[in-house]
Length: 263
Image (cartoon, rainbow, N blue to C red; front, side):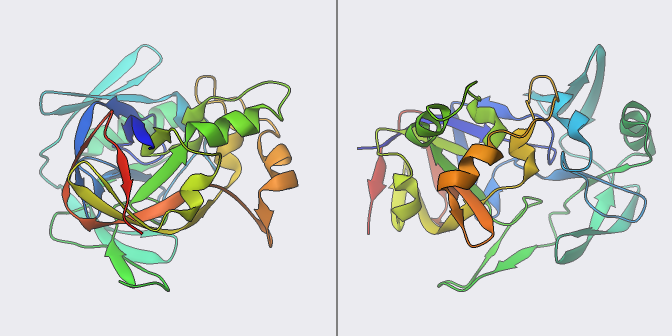
């Protein structure tokens, strides 16, 4: 039976993640996952696709503060913030009003990225919806690219690394739930399943972009592993690795939990 090997959240979209031993699973994603985001002057979301150096910003949650580190600098952001103003932002096809929480926070990021940007937060009062073709046809989602949960098995990574001259680490794929104890890419075929007290439904394999070519420890970009994945994980004009899922019932999950397949 597959088990949970690791749980990851990414409090600020496209920055470094945080590994947890347990977490609350909500419809829009794990608690504290991708509730903050950087946007440019036009309100367009920023990721490692445009700014690969975002990989070098690490995050921690200490008490009720989000601690962001970059080189020798540190920024402390209260989890409970007061908005200075609202800002129109867009992330893919979603357009919504986000909270700009502090000019000083935005300037800290702008100075280190050498580009004007703003740190925004998703308001509790606003629900971003993702529409898709399978029942229940929609879900809430945070600032994640498309779906609230991304699941990946260690066996899928092992198969990929067997095809590479230099292995890559699993953090490139920015999965929320990492499992083991299954066949490579078996996670693609799961339908409904339970982990801990939370219920999940698989929607589709996850289409990958150039972010997986960025070493999350150095920020250096290369051609792999997209080049190798193109040889065996391409369907149509997209390359798939890991699987996108939604929540069917709120709950909590922990490292070591079994993945119980329901259908």
